[in-house]
Image (cartoon, rainbow, N blue to C red; front, side):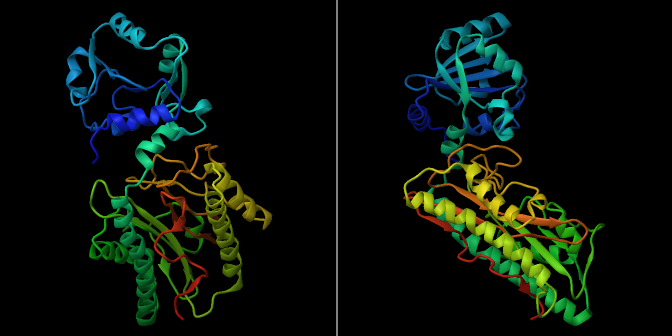
Length: 397
């Protein structure tokens, strides 16, 4: 994990034309602050702390006297408080009326992933006469940017996942040919073993869902709950993985297949709509960067959702278009979302996100097609892995 880099953070603060960044936590309530300050969530954090990073100069650590050690690894002047009056005095010394300060706050909770500062703390700090703005773009620049090393390592992972899915479809074909059936759980376990063979890890078992279960985006089988997979069934597989390093970044893809030699038109029709929606978002992101124009995360969701809505299935697209990908599979960068939230953060070079529209028909089947997008430092946009699904796989063909 990269060490705390004050010079990098202050450069980002100046770039955003802010007076400072005020990082606050109480009892590990602000996971973003802990990540930025390189603090373990397992730290014994029972009192409030504030860490103020000015655009220039020396940071200030405001810590309770009995927990000063928690910030001892960070640079800056240490101010130990005990009473509420002493806490107020230290904050009054650094927060001057008219200052614009970033915090982990989202106006009207538009982006819940950023809303780590509680309303009471926000109200208290506003009384110092400061303007509090969201640290969303700072978070992106600090936590969502991939290094060249992360990108190069990710290429192998991104290439492996489509191979594993093709292997899983081959496993299904073999099982149906040999015994006429398999199960969601059996295929899930096969994929889990494949991840081990490819020396990859995951944080949750892959999704293998058949027929109506595929209409539930987050359905997942286990040893007690699963359906059989039979000839004529529709299958959705979603898996995500990365190497077993804390600094490694994730890959996350979804493919669909049909257990037959020819795919029925009803599946092809829905897949084609979803594929077109997926590619519309990819084209928008690619063209904006090629033209040197910015693109906000919600815009990619809008164009994807329009394709599906225009086709008459808007009510069946029940989640955002995509999520940030970092060292967390659902990272802290911009999400392609104008549905669950309104994410106005700008997509930046050296970041990655998924594009994964879906149509989910309750009681029948669901289609999702997911690719990962990486924006190179020079603005060149690619989908990683070198392959995206172009048609429903005829598993028994």
